[in-house]
Amino acid sequence: MSLTRFCDDCGNILELPNISTGLMACLQCGNKQKLPDDDKTISINYYNSGGRIITDNEIKRVLHESTTYRIKRKCPECENPYMVVISNDDYQFMFACPECESSFKPT
Figure 1: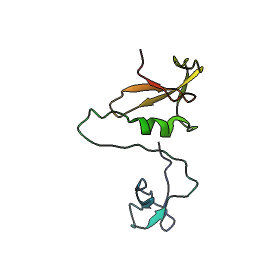
Figure 2: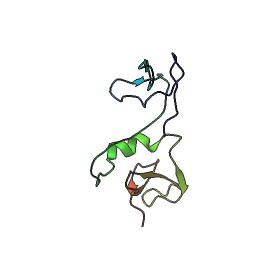
Figure 3: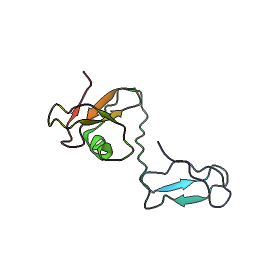
Figure 4: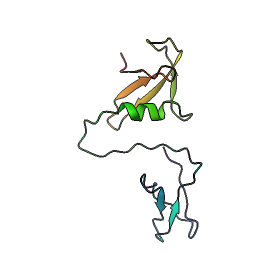
């Protein structure tokens, strides 16, 4: 989830940042603003006909973020008491351990 950002020129809502440039464009006046360097927002978007699997790199990237949803469930590998819940647009869920970085499908 991304925080809504507003244009410095007209105050209107900015589009989500372009991942490669880090720029956000105003939906009204077209002004472009750079995403702040200290921004911690993570957004994984991918549009296709479905059937996409979350990659290991994506899992590792979001695993240690403070905004990632955690549940009290013991890791079967290292017995860490908490797991991270990760899902994709097709509502396919996985659990990942922030301690040993193993990932598992719910059973």
